[in-house]
Image 1: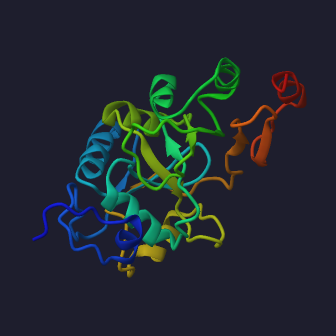
Image 2 (image 1 turned 180 degrees about the horizontal axis):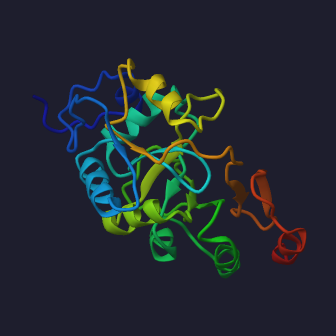
Image 3 (image 1 turned 90 degrees about the horizontal axis):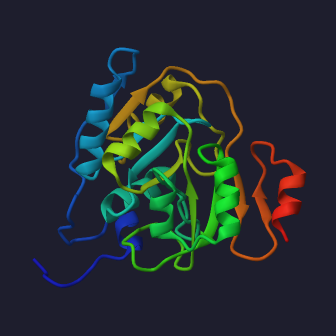
Length: 239
């Protein structure tokens, strides 16, 4: 057993990392929990336990079903990349519980705060310049994409874990988005890397992904158009 080396994310994604890493994901069967009006608290607690042990959870969001995991856990982040067949050159967005958590991860100017107050919580992801001190994996070295969602179950998980969560849509990269729970189960049931827990909210309506706004420069850029962004707001905030 080696003592000092740290596995690269590339090695984690390829499954060749020999080092014992804290929060290593145990090979377990994929568990599915049906969400009802009466079991929200227990569902949240189970999701927290899985995330805390380095697992990956399929969770409904205010856009589509997504994969979430502890962004500070190398193994969990590596597993998401493998599950998605996602290139390492494409960083993962991060869910945050509030503006304070966002400020611990990124440099947020007064202009950026104005934007966030307009659109958070909600379906807007913002790209900001990253603060380098926080231990986060799967993101760019200089920038970070953050979102505060607007979905009760997910917001409860974020609040109670009190951790930034790596997130992405549940579908394989460059494949159609999935809104039917049976299709999610079918996708991963025989996969080598599968989610540790699926939170089954049933089939959800087809929805646009979040709008992605780049706030790293003076001029605001819309990198992906999802929900409608009022033109007057973007013009006003360019000043």
